[in-house]
Image (cartoon, rainbow, N blue to C red; front, side):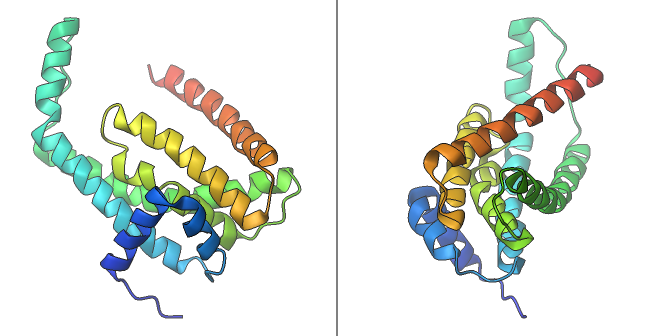
Length: 191
């Protein structure tokens, strides 16, 4: 199966996901395979990482310095070259993690006796993470993007599997709790 890359179609999808997710997810139920969703991640994550790169080069040094001065702590600094390497590495990690998220969602759905294929889970997870792909590097906006991504995940699951809102919320919330605990554990080991 040949997959073509049309950036205009991808950005049209982004607009549809962000503005009218119920319509988008009801249409994408008929999408076959995972390749179109992967092309979507390739383009949207690249755009988001470009935003990260611009933010990191243009704004982060100024914001970081003023926050550090106001809190009276030393400012962390990255050279532009090192920052570019980190952003590129993050981009490839994002691409790989898209598959991990898909497998994780498929597994989690099986715990709730929801029959799913990898393709379905991957597609839902990929499209629902759109706000995260684009806005994850922007302070405060990234938090709102994460909440909107959870909402999109709920909408996607409801449309794909004809689940009730209550069951869908239960699935999503119970998935978040172990992830949050694991993240706290990792952060405690890092610091």
